Amino acid sequence: MTTSQVINPATEQVVASVDSTSAADTDAAVERAQAAARTWREVAPGDRARLLRRFADAVDADLDHLAGLEVANAGHTIGNARWEAGNARDVLHFAAGMPERLLGNQIPVAGGVDITFHEPLGVVGVIVPWNFPMPIAAWGFAPALAAGNAVVLKPAELTPLTAIRLGELAREAGLPDNVFQVLPGKGSVVGQRFVTHLAVRKVVFTGSTEVGKQIMAGCAEQVKRVTLELGGKSANIVFADADLERAAATAPYGVFDNAGQDCCARSRILVQRSVFDRFLEMLEPAVRGVKVGDPTDEATEMGPLISAAHRERVAGYVAPSKVAFTGTLPDGPGFWYPPTVVLPEGPADRVLTEEIFGPVVAVLPFEDEADAIRIANDTEYGLSGSIWTNDVGRALRVSRGVEAGNLSVNSHSSVRYWTPFGGYKQSGLGRELGPDAALAFTETKNVFIATQ
Image 1 (cartoon, rainbow, N blue to C red):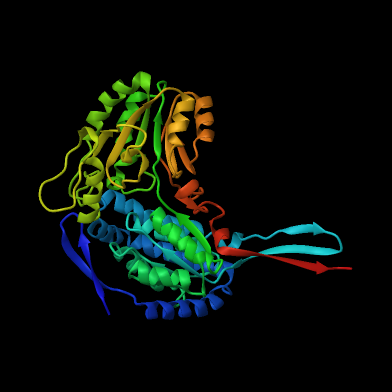
Image 2 (image 1 turned 135 degrees about the horizontal axis):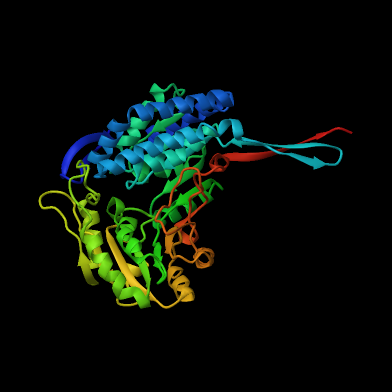
């Protein structure tokens, strides 16, 4: 059996070695999940809900431990890591309300009664990225379990520790054996078997658009369902009538949170030309004020990038660009990169068109509403975005005009577990979270009963 080393990105020290799941072991896990799914679907909805609540309570009791694992494994700030563990707990509590609310319909028909049922798919494969390991895992496995499916989950190779712990907590909470299995390993091995194994009836993937396309193509061979949450190049649109001081003060946290390793990062700031220079003047101290450093320090606002290779990739985008100003970064070991503001040379500049996935933001001017919408939509992505204005009519017009799945007005909030989340265009396919989350893990069966 091969193993992989888990590196703390803030110290560059090895924190754990994790055994990698082989293709044969993946197949065996899927077969166990298939058997477990047959009994899990028969568990009464109230009992399934009770077990999910116990799972949520187990996560809550272990919250500080989970947060500490994420700080060491992913370099997340301790404040963010606590929120992430809490989000996994809250998603489980929310999902616990779903089994008893998978309501079918009675549809009026002639000559009888017509009713519908929402039935589980069977085995669901969830492939989790390294940027937000706990929340994104829960967004997939919680509603899938609620709907009566068994789940096999592959964490990212770089960040497997919290997923492994969540698997342990599920068992401690009393979930039946093999209903939820965590399989660390390579995407080309474990993830690929999720795509090709006939017993896996759906794949949930969060990651790059490039890999998402490959997964979608592979699943098409079996007409296998997919939910894809992929890349983003979101716009933060600031109009002249906005509260500029607040817009500038909050802009860094809309893009530099988690060191910019966020598919919802507002990595393009569009500012109305009449206030462009003034906005930049206010943005500079806000960027320089972002506290970058030790993730275990409660005061730290931004940690390191995930790896040396990723830091090199991010730097490659900035090197040819015009840098307006940067923030600070600590000395010593760690995969650090400073918050960076660039002024793009033109509409084809890579910092405007490609997802950097680091603490880099491009700032550019626009003329009017139509121009702002045109620039915001000039991307293959459409995941998130923000609109800053004090004009409610403008907020609604621009919100309807921007091609993105999750928009905020005078805010940078993208995700609430009780509202749907997903992207337009090449940012993904399907929706996660929200009141209908469990339905994405079911088949709808129609039954007609003749009465004449």
